[in-house]
Length: 458
Image 1: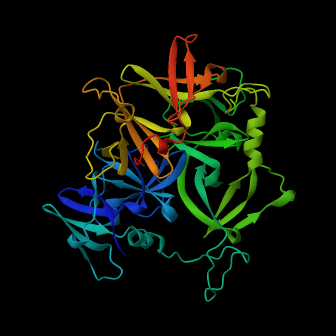
Image 2 (image 1 turned 90 degrees about the vertical axis):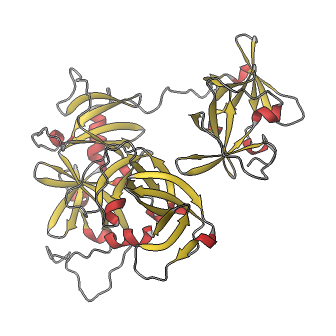
Image 3 (image 1 turned 90 degrees about the horizontal axis):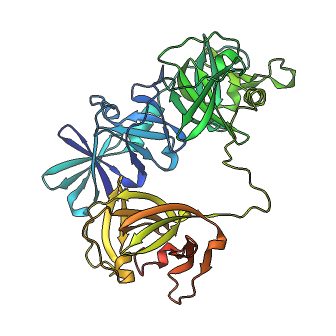
């Protein structure tokens, strides 16, 4: 296995490396929901990018002291490919490093966590095989328990790993329930500010603000006939259905588990309790599967107060607005379509690249990802500022992301197409001129094909 680039991770005075090909993002540590009965190396669940991932302690995977998760230097690293449901909690991320093959020593070992040693400056970096250390957790065997004739397995027969789905297992009262993980948007600690709503149904606790979105919180325990027991393990599961978002309060999270179709007994149409879709056999335990109709019933009962995810209803004849990010270069204003903008960050030092294209200023490292920085100032012949509130706008491009220094970011606006005029210049840089303030303010909108803005920058 050829290792081309690694991300360096520090633990005290020891340096480890993992292949950047496996890395998605590097983030600050979010809220972590602990799991009962989970492997020692699992720290819990956390919400990343609107999804829920299992968080593994990188230190514990290697037999080291646990990561504190409270230090400002601690980070969460999301993973790609078949490991995209997992993330790593690490002590400290330093820098990504392109490997000089003359300075790496591949170890001729089998079934070992460390697969190579990299010599870098005065450090020896131990390269970790994430596939090996994670597989070591997943390979733990649990003896089967016979609870019915249906769940009896011939131990000599082959085990087929197919038709498996991931479920979040949680407690209400003394009972365990499950929801498909795909139905969940995120999980929150229950110690949030919830505003009570007078006149609402008994199961409604109130409403909370979640990143500028209003979400109604229902007590799933009360809906299922349990007496709510406030405690530090209480959690709010955020679900989405029929374009509406609803928070569900439960007692505690137990685990994320994969179950196959063979583990599930569907109750079918003869089921009198429409709140339960079936029963999952998990060893000597039975887990009730929450039905979609239960969530639909909660939404229907509280339809008047549950907020739709639609910001506004749009009629068939409504004008489709164009959202843009407006910024200054020199004394003029320009704009990118909001669809092309990935993020806007503060000014950061740029590393020059030898023999780079003329319009390329260099590269920067954003959360472990290398981003090319192009120069709109050079392209447009504008003097480069030496001070001020400069920003970097990171844009999507077919071959990766491109960043651009700008003097300032002025506005993020929704533009009526009637305010736009096609740009007739022959260089192809701009697609439209935006007329603001009754034509007194003109803004040039860059062509949506960002990769053509700079020759060779991508």
